[in-house]
Amino acid sequence: MAKPDRGPRFLKRRGRDLTVKDGGGRKHQATLEPVDQHGTQDDGAFAFGYCKSCDWTGPARRARDKARKDAVAHQDDCPSKGKVRIGVSEDDPR
Image (cartoon, rainbow, N blue to C red):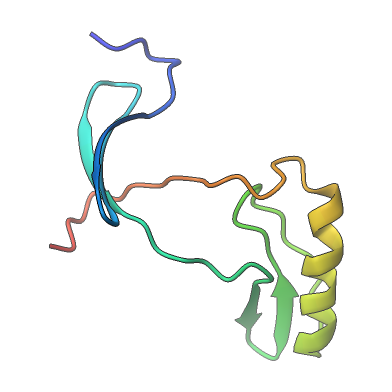
């Protein structure tokens, strides 16, 4: 049985498709997708920068350009330094 504090284990990869085992020993299928490196998201009339590596979100801005600049400036301070994060959902898109 897998240790509960253990992170995901990669079992196999075929192109963009992965088979991953989580800390609880359950297998998941995942697909690698490119992400926007300097991400912004909209929330109503405001936009904010975000980082998928460390879950940082910047202040809400009216201008997307300022939100994008916040995201670029965050890269130097990012504790994850752009490392890839893996998430799974209970829904199987296949």
